[in-house]
Image: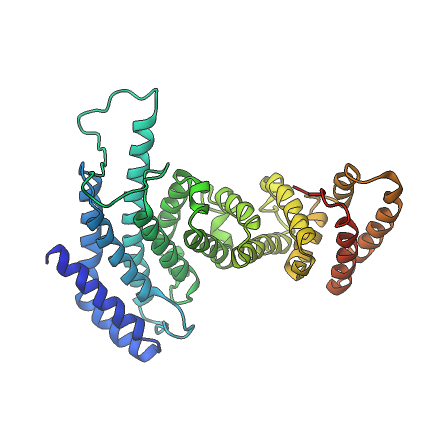
Length: 387
């Protein structure tokens, strides 16, 4: 099949799966797709990504083609409504879907890594002249590709990155992939996917990702579901994805977009909850206390800016970080003392003494009220900030 035929077929299949909103219709479509069409798209995208990566020219048309394939896979793995994708317990369909979809995302993210690595190699002042076999992906002037950023990417690439992250997010959270089977059969497909994901995030410039809110949303959504559903593997793999998750979480806590900020708060609370649950053994986050110490004060800054954002997750996170000795009320007071007059400290001490008592209780409502009292007190100092 020609490039155009594959692209148009992907668009048609995407539309068909978008209309398959119930499990019966979905399974009929899925059986048809797996039996006769899935391998075409997996192999074609793999070959096309490899072909472009080893070519000196990359056209906008080729990137849009790849995005149409990724968008099709997004429509196939989507787990909304919740009961849309349900496979029989003895079916291998969940494994097949995961392996095929991650083949696609891994191919695309590897292609993105090639672009970034080439960009960095070309810009390195200490780099030796390129060997004859080195690949430089160029964007011809007669193409409409523009606004190449510091990663060597443009908005079409980021659209494909977003699709890849959304695909992975649905795979890890949809409940239709039997991840236990990978462990039983010592199949490393999930770990290999996480490794490519880790390498991609290490290569991408986070400040550039922040400029694309929809991409950032897909990133933090993926991280939230990885932490929620696959906490154990994140702390058992021999490459460090947790560092990246915490870095993006910290940045997302500072974002004005409420949904992104709330998902970041969910990540913090869930990691801390899992740590509390495992206190009988080694605390999985003990190597990340410095990261959480920064996050501790960011949470204080969030609720200082808007006391209506004080919720159970923030209260739990602050309380747990104090319990785990990541930070303390005394450190909070020290930051405040730097900014207020001495005569105000008596009232402040009283407010914090009451907070300390209430933190030892299980009544979140009382803690929220006391935090509101403290923050209302601090808001009279307009220049005050925790970060």
